[in-house]
Image (cartoon, rainbow, N blue to C red; front, top):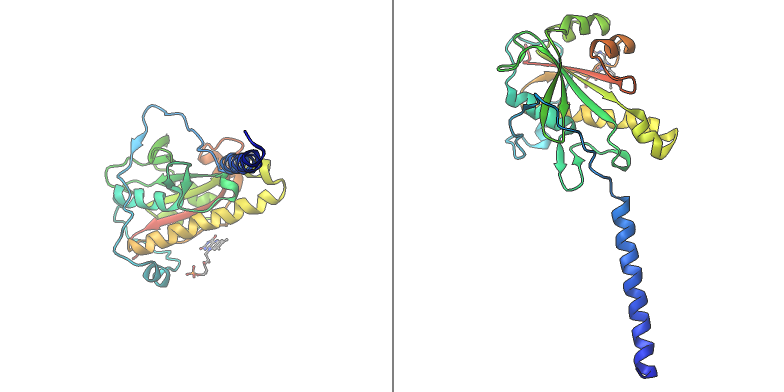
Length: 241
Ligand SMILES: Cc1cc2nc3c(=O)[nH]c(=O)nc-3n(C[C@H](O)[C@H](O)[C@H](O)COP(=O)(O)O)c2cc1C
């Protein structure tokens, strides 16, 4: 190789090396899909609709807290849509969801407390939502709605809702990466998820309100949440009266 040729080849190799290092660095910063082992008995939810008939502007204009509901059950399709709005996976390649998450750490876990005649084709009980497969997992059978209402300072809308969506969080998933600042990120994320529920409910002509006032330990016990999961929000849902 002559000198002229060599002087061109070395910078090209260096540029290629730098590009390869940048690509590797980029991939290692992407969040990884958290595997959730399949558990026997998971119930498939209907596929969520990703192209609806209500514009985002209309849903935003309609959104308000609704606390009075009829006793008309929800459909499984509506439940599927609400859960997908809260935490559904929209980027299967890397696990991205409908709500943003600091560093893609995804600290939120979503549950539903289903009342008697709360949802067509779904027995009353407490269920955990598994975003990775868009399924429900039964945690505890039976209608626990009135116990949840007691834990939520007897707020009537919890007692009369057809379902109550409970958002819990594992703070360590986020604080492991961000330290103490991660705590505020988790609260922010719960807000994002619940706003999605509000907007999806508005688009489906359903009513919801976000509940922050409840006894943490009572909700934790009622839902049989693992020690590391802390309840942050309750969102009753029903057809507006
Ligand atoms: C963090 C937070 C906690 C809330 N907690 C409760 C609650 O415990 N009970 C309730 O009825 N509403 C609760 N709300 C709903 C507010 O009362 C409601 O958003 C407010 O009155 C504004 O009405 P709008 O949502 O219709 O705009 C809460 C809202 C937020 C953001």
